[in-house]
Amino acid sequence: MCGIIAYIGNQEVVPLLIGGLKKLEYRGYDSAGVCLVIDHGLKTVKEKGKVVKLEKSLVKQKLSSTIGIAHTRWATHGEPNQINSHPHLDCSSKIAIAHNGIVENYHALKELLESEGHKIVSDTDSEIIAHLVEKFYQGDLEQAVTKALELIVGSYGLVVMHQDEEKIIAARKSSPLIIGVGDGEMFIASDVPAILKHTKQVIYLQDEEIAIINKDEYSIKNLNGQPVNKKIEEIKWSVDQIEKGGYKHFMLKEIFEQPTSIANVISGRVKDNQIKITVNFDIKKVKRIIITACGTSWHSALIGKYLIEQLTEIPVEVDYASEFRYRQPVVNKEDLLIVISQSGETADTLAALREAKLKGAKTLGIVNVVGSTITREVDSGIYLHAGPEIGVASTKAFSSQVVALLILALYIRQEKKQKLDERLLKDLDNLPQTIKETLGLDADIKKMAKEFKGVTNFLYLGRGINFPVALEGALKLKEISYIHAEGYPAAEIKHGPIALIDQEMPVVFIATKNNLSEKIISNMQEVKARDGKIIAVVNEVTEEIKKLADYTIEVPEVSNKLSPIINVIPLQLLAYHIANDKGIDVDKPKNLAKSVTVE
Ligand code: G6P
Image 1 (tube, rainbow, N blue to C red):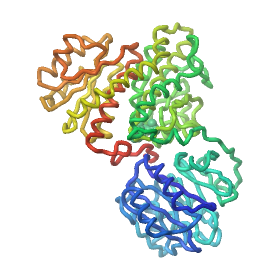
Image 2: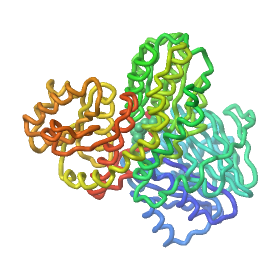
Image 3: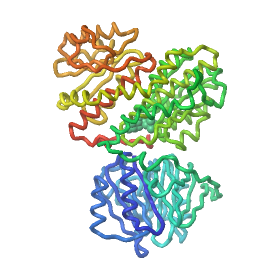
Image 4: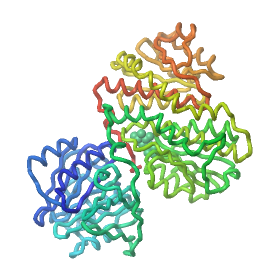
């Protein structure tokens, strides 16, 4: 998704903006640009493609300034090209804006502005904002921006500057924006990594708040012009945590961080066979749970259904957030809606949460990013404490989400005065160590991956609690290697996918020990009979598995309820190595965004 960084202070702004944009690259983008105030004039430089291209062009021009705004764009309205890149200017070229979000009434506003003589040059919805501000500008940028926002229907994380005013105006609605407070300098950014090198003191803007920022001070108001008092918060992440630390890609680093991220989600919550979490409502009264999420978080939701239903006997429904929000869901006061989101900013997940709240459901968030919008709107929450996840394909957040769901299920069970399974608790306690052992498979998987880089299709099969792991394995592969992959419940292949199986089709079976192991073996035989290439994730390479599987991945045995966390690791590594062998920029796969803040 688009990223914003803006600065006002005493430092040279170009390296600072470029540095910030590079830290936002993980969000996904297809063009980038900056606008600087130089001698009471605006200088804009924009490029299609990567930030390094923009950097090269800026270095050539040797521009000097201490105020500027910058943006990485992920195209929604209009193709990725230089004209459609941000920042956008008004007709007089005195006002510049950078915008994340969507102006939903853009056609009507465009017509209005054009009828008044404004010349709109790009295909974007965002450019309209620069012209609206121009329309209302009478020597006071803050007033003009406030009036412009009154007309905008949609979402915005917005920064605006005027060549004659030494300030930047920032505004937010449904698209995250933070202010970084420095000494004689201020930053505005859509995410913490962009400014962390410079300051750890941040203010989170809330919806419909406007910030007026100059180098020494800031003030924040609501859309009615009333001042809003905001707390400065201190970011706990270190710069090191958001660097690659010797790994080739963030994704690989994050896969290898799982022993620590899992220890963090458990820490303080499971002790002496007791679960200690705080839920701000009586969870025993909940009659039904609905879990909603997108992408990888939706896969952990599916695992959560197995865990919660088996441990608590409360019925659980799982829904894509984008579907839930529009299907007029039947939700009532006795329901609990759980939203799962790494970023805490996914537009559809947030909208689903708001929909359920309107209908009176209790809400609980399982989120990684501290202070994100979802965490501010839920009744209760469980933070993952997984640390920043930068790679677009989610890995450590997924495993932490599953553990958080398990802890929640165990907590409900404990509240209902039902006994907790000691073997499960012991395995949970050992989980960071078991993950470490599983990561020891990396070298073998790397070798195995070389065999598959030319393949065009993959099938992933699992059953029970490991069916969602098959979905997640397939998603990882397609996200970063661009190989078509599908996940299926193993027994379902007879109803369609079996038609695709031949010697060209690798089929990954998640076949670790459980009550369905025998049945999975029969499914393998069906694939073998059609010459499919079998990759089996197992706990033990038995004689039978030797006969059936072309490749085996032997993972440590844990309680079935924890098996998805162990089983997903070789699948993450397999996807990573195949994509890396294909020379793909694994952390920034094409067309994808880390945080999807538009619907
Ligand atoms: C994007 C990311 C995925 C992520 C999904 C949901 O599609 O590329 O990795 O799973 O959004 O994001 P969330 O932050 O809500 O978990």
